[in-house]
Structures are given as structure tokens and as C-alpha cells.
Image 1: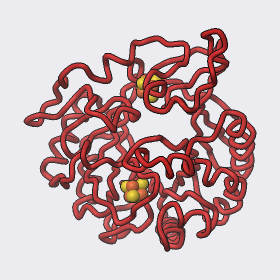
Image 2 (image 1 turned 30 degrees about the vertical axis):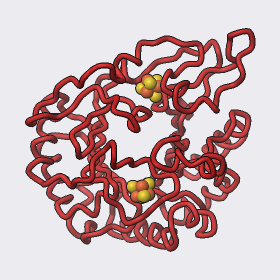
Image 3 (image 1 turned 90 degrees about the horizontal axis):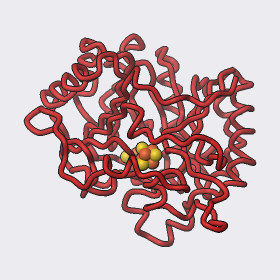
Length: 334
Ligand code: SF4
Ligand code: SF4
């Protein structure tokens, strides 16, 4: 069954970047230490920040990220603390290297999903994007997680560099025993976005290509019994547009204390909240919250500002389609 996942305020999502350090140097990495900090949060601070959000939004979902979160020596303690605080679900996003024997230090009762990132169905596609040997490490990590009884999801970030190979993923997902598949659209963010060579090679795919490939592959994955989620990206002119910054509760927390409500804003000091002395306070204006209510015919205002290349030429001032909020997803359940 295919459906658009509506935004809701019933449950908040806490995307918690514990550190920005990583063992890989993916070409499309969105982490920007100048904006997000270079520090690793200590476990006491993690505990206090988890408590802060648990009190504000009981039964939120927490997603631990980095950098590579398994590089954090106290990740298992952070997981257990999240459970004790009543978080509804705990996910660990990982590049698959699984440092500090994390699979031995947490249990399937404590972690809802290990979410692995892989950007190609073979080393020849994935490794030029994510680093030599990363395909092997990631697929081995998935097998190890499955062996220990963890649920596993896989994230494939689509760009011009790998969309032609997405159709080979269903077979691989089946072989690996992946439980959920997330297709993401590459964000023009992070240090690479400043480099014109990478911008072209890794650019977002156009609407026709996206629509010709993504839904079909998603259907094919779902037919194998795997739930698939992919971003909507393109809206017809008469489809309703909503900004998650106004109608949902997502928090993107970085080690320097910045808290964003919109991932597209993360390359800029546009965060609307920050953690100061363990309190969540409003950040200085102008910030992302001032942009969310702006109503423009092209849909997402941040997309219009920072990645307008995915917009069509306006015909008499009216665009042929709109860009959806980057957090609006379609889901196909088997
Ligand atoms: S694994 Fe993630 S944090 Fe590390 S370089 Fe790749 S995209 Fe960046
Ligand atoms: S991606 Fe666009 S629509 Fe979504 S929260 Fe950010 S500004 Fe709003």
C-alpha cells in the first residue's frame, strides 16, 4: 500500500548528532564542522540533552547520528538512557564500521533499528562515493547485525552518480535481509556543495528521471516484503504544500548546541533554537523560523534559496511544479 506520510505533532523526532568526527570522507557528506562543531559530547551532556527533549516531548523517537555515532565510546549508555527516559524508539545511523563492538553492547530490545548507509549495489558504484572498502564493511556490518537479531534499515542517497544503479538494489536488499529501505535525495549541503566539479557530478536528478525510476524501484522492493520510504520531492501545482517547520516537531541537534528545525538550513547559522546551560532557548533573529511562513509558488523556500537548480523555468511567473518539504515522504508497505 502506497501512502504519503502526513506531518504530525503527535510524536517528535530527535536527530541527535553526538559528534561530527567520522572515519569516512563521503563525497556528498553534509556534515559541516564550521557550523556544527568539532567536539564530541560527553555522556553527561548527552544525558542532560536527552532529558531536555524527553520532558518537552514524551515518547519521541531518537536517532543517533554523527559523524559516525559508533565512534562514540558511550553510545550504548546513551541508548540505555534513552530507553529509561521513555523514548518511543531508538535508531542508530551508521556507515557500517560499527566501532567499539556496539553490536555486543546493546540488544535488539534496546535498539529498534540499525540504519546503514550504502549508495550503490556494488563496490564499483558505492566506493567511489563513500570510500574504498566501504561497501564490504557496510554489508558485513548488516550481516553481523542481522545475525544478532537486530532490525536493519538501509539508506540509499540518490544523485546523478548512482540513480542508474538503484534498480539493482532490490535483489541486494533481499540477500542482506534488510527490513526497511529508505531512498533519500541528495542535499546540496556540506563542504562538497561549494565545489563546482562535485556539484555537477553529484547533482540532484531532474523530475522526469526521478519519477521514471524511484516509484518503480520502490514498488519492486515492497513486492519483496520490505517497507520502503522515499521523499516526495515534486508536487503538482494544485497539491497542498506544508512546511514541516510549522506543522511537525523535528529537532536536529548538533554538538555545538545548535538545534535546527529544518535540515536544509544546517549549512548556515539559521538555527531557531540552541541549548544553553542545558536549556532550550530561542536563537537570535533572523533565523529559519522567519523563513517557514513565507509562501512562495515554488513550494519550499529554503530549496528556492539554496538549491534552485531543481526548479523549472517559471512560465509567466507560475512554476510547472512545486518542491515539497524535504521531510515529506511516501511509504509503500508490502
Ligand atoms: S559516513 Fe556520514 S558522516 Fe561520515 S563522511 Fe559519510 S556522510 Fe559524512
Ligand atoms: S525543507 Fe523547506 S518546507 Fe521543509 S522545513 Fe525546511 S524550509 Fe520548511
